[in-house]
Amino acid sequence: MAKKAPAQDTVELYLDGPEITADVFTRSVRTFFDLIKDVSAEVGGRRTLEWIVSLKPGSIGICATAKPVKSDGVLVRRTIRAITRGIQTVEKRRGRPEHFSDSALQRLFQLGSIVGSGDQGVSVIRIADQSISPVSIAYVDELLGTPAKSYGTIEGKLFALNTKGRLTFSIAETLTGKDVKCYFSDDLFDEVVGAIRRRVAAYGLIRYKKNGQPVSVEIEKLTVFPDRSELPQFRDIIGLLGERHG
Image (cartoon, rainbow, N blue to C red; front, side, top):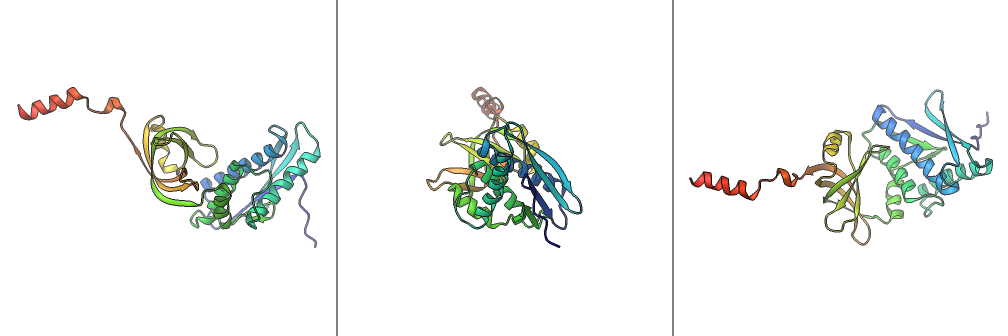
């Protein structure tokens, strides 16, 4: 029997693996929809398409069907084509795909990271019959101009917590004042929430631009510095010294 051709208004996310956890599943689905929305906005602008969700029986297959809001079917077909061709372009290392913003490339990077980690229970992720492989991680780094990586610490003020998709927050780096995106795991969530608007030191794998500017950190440890009000004041120190020498 001939393979049924995919619908021209639908893009499918397919997951497979021995032990896919609820956390990994929801993270994969959110990243998938963030990705297709990013590309859709680049193709035709925001709020031009609405995505209708359906489930494919017999596997973890989630279908997103584009429904025009302010346009016709031409925009739908252009968007679906941009998504599928863009992923193929990255996987085949043929340059930056058209209509893929930095944000969309980061979503693709995140999906590739889920497959490439080897410990998240996911062995296959496909979008529109195109497999997402760990190869895309390294190539997206090249496309975004962040080839340099090393372990280190970034210090600055924590702000802009984002719980949509992969957990992230931003640090306004002390040295440059530039924003550095920080990725963190669920076990650090309460610690991060308690550190909002406070000065922190984030240790982990740092990615840099070619000019040496840090871009992102995969956090392994977060240190929260005390507020000024929590630090001992000069008069307290003098009093303590007086007690010791009294």
